[in-house]
Amino acid sequence: MMYWLYELREWLTAHHWISDDAVLYKLLNLFKYHTFRAGGAAITAFVLSLMYGGRLIRKLISLKIGQPIRTAEEIHKLHELHGKKAGTPTMGGILILGAIVISTLLWAKWDNVMVWIVLFTTIGLGALGFRDDYLKISKKNSKGVSARTKLVWQTSVAVLAGLMFAYAVPADNGVTLRALYLPFVKDAVISDMHLFAVALFALIIVGASNAVNLTDGLDGLATGCSVTTALAYAAFGYICGNARYSDYLGVAHHSLANELPIVAMAMAGACLGFLWFNAHPAKMFMGDTGSLALGGCIAALAIGCKQEIVLALVGGVFVMEAMSVIIQVWSFKTRGKRVFRMAPIHHHFELEDSKGQKWHENQVIVRFWIMSLLFAILGLATLKLR
Image (cartoon, rainbow, N blue to C red; front, top):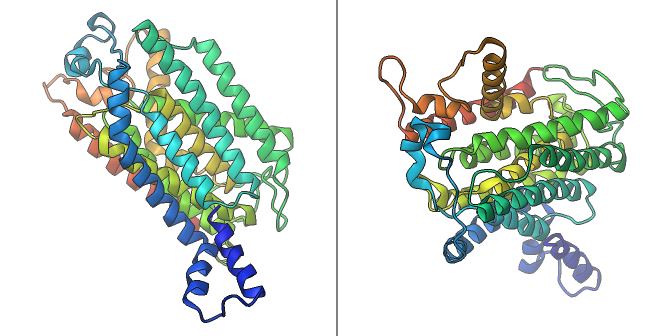
């Protein structure tokens, strides 16, 4: 929407209402630049989160929308650490989702199909999370949407988003989103994956949404990791959408990716604003409304700028969390033994080892944030290794 101010400048100039050296001309010209609008989106999302975070907390408390915590019989020693969090307002992901959508609509160009696909994916999975949170609260237990229903919903949104990415986004500069690019390789490994591209995109979206959901177990953990991942994909999107930089770095160039940094920065700003209330001790949890939406948004951004495979590195913390659960379940079912004291892996570090040592919740959170930042930097470093 803000881009229209730049078009207004063109109209005013054409009708000789302002001159090329007028202050208004120069101010309106700023709205042409993606970097300026990306910064505006980040600030807008952050301010919206701060403005409405306190109000949302009070509203959730008045509605008695509190986080149900699993019983001591279900999680044993972990209940001693987190049992006091029962009743903390949840569904705060509404704040993140609203800030992302409003900021994106304000600052991004509306004629960019990639922006709409990313928003569709984010809202679609956020709606699933909202339904899951609502059922948990209404039933006053930790069980929400059934695993089958959740998977069907996720897969449906992911397949639709995958189809749109594969066939609704036109090829540009010889680059189609159906091509497969790998890290450290300059040219496409597969020039056109056809329908397999849809399957790959759907798998990435479902996997990312579940991975972020699993990471959301400590105050601010998923929120902070989402910020670093979003910043990395803001950089990827800017490079992919810029012909000069993409050519210099040997990255696939698609002009429609130039609006993705605005969505990514809106996400970063929304998460930073939410972190204001979600930092330990959290006054509000994002719930599945936030975590599923954030995972979908990250995956869609990665697909849009043709850096979906690098997501395994940039989102390294999310991958660790998901893999720890997979390994734990596999090991227990096949060997009858647990590899970790508890999965996801952030809980493993909270529980005492054989020497009586453990990490405090704050230590786990900050150390995982550090790892997330390092993973993001390593992911960006792959740009020069092609």
